[in-house]
Length: 256
Image 1 (cartoon, rainbow, N blue to C red):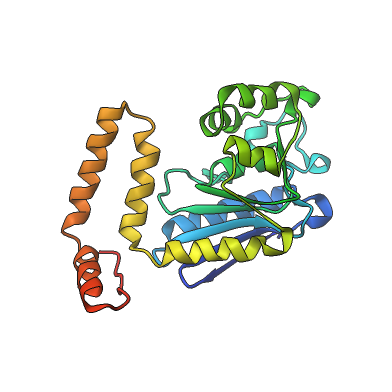
Image 2 (cartoon, one colour):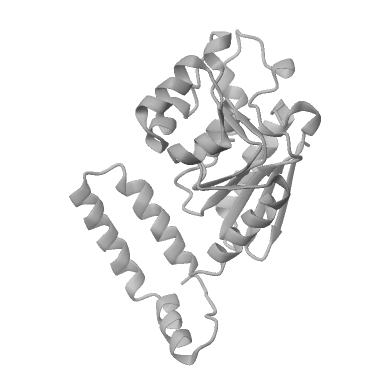
């Protein structure tokens, strides 16, 4: 159906698989993505996800223009199925690593911006070209891009429709790592396994503290972080973490 989904060692691997169409999204892929993100959110065994595309040319170029609904239909409806958005839920609290293997354009970049970590192939390119076709990055691009990189750079991308390469994306902070194409999936798996090995409640709390805290004044964000620390203090996993450290063994997390 254009999207592959497997689970392994507490990690969900979500892969766009339409390389013949630059991993753009047709209605079937949209439907499948909505189902997958819903399952990731509900499955307690999943602690972290890796989101990527097939091949070395493109992560995702957004909507498949050849299969775009007619203008009289609401375009947002294609990106929303049964109340479930295909854009990863930034308040799901389970981290998502986006491994950008090529072009991330339009809706593809918007999906990447909804992820918590973005790493990229040296061949990756990023941009919002909607202004070239009388449209707008209307899902989250106009809001998330200037929150991820300097506003002036975001405005340049949104208003000119120009693409930036991986080196520029790293320089402005859009991504955290660049790697040669052959090593991208290995690096994503490495990061995912490191996250999955940590206490799941702590990982969720760390993400929640950052995402929610950025919506608050600093003093309120700090107070919210203190509250989350207090919630974690008496959990079984925190006690297990201290015991495991003292006994020089790997902890056995229960998520409690």
